[in-house]
Image (cartoon, rainbow, N blue to C red; front, side, top):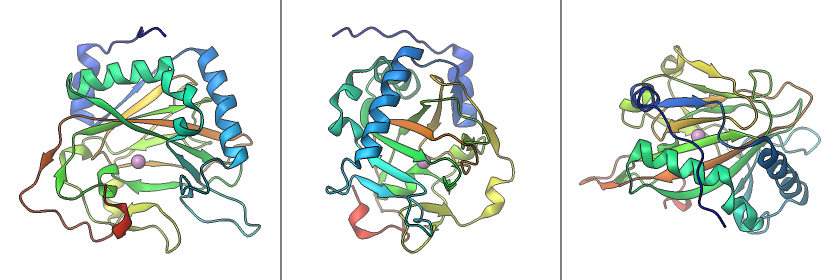
Length: 250
Ligand code: NI
């Protein structure tokens, strides 16, 4: 297996990430690899792999006919090990080390699919709101669509500069969903949408407020998300993340 990477951020891109809390890049991997990953992805969602182990979750709510509207698979590489040795993963790690420091490591993948026509929005949130409140996290996610991501099919949206805040108050988006949502809608007034081509990616810091719209197109919106962490700093007093369910704490 080759360890080759094919990407490096410019100084201007690194500066933009630290200023805005997010960055869009045009090409993380090849069209061939995207096509191969798309096949694996559709197989995993089609077979409901990981459902028994709690790794296949509904982030929103089933529709009136019992269909999933925002299914997520945690650690899809557990069910399809070839996902751990992609060029996309190697390039993503290289980018994470440029942005977080050479000690940055891969922390886990997940996949969020929005079915055509009924794919629900992913509520506005900060990723760190899901994590251990006793630790200040240094982390980012690299979000790669396996087809073009458009405003119509549910591309990512970000609030520029929101990563410099601490974690803001969140609540569960609905009683039987697993998704968190920020309490204040004022926070998201200055948001920007980030449509990107297949094989491109967006990178966001763990405190950047972000959202993905509903899928009102006629094809699935497949997102493959790779997480990376740098050095974590234990806090003297844990923050109050009262919206978390006890079983979430990592
Ligand atoms: Ni997120």
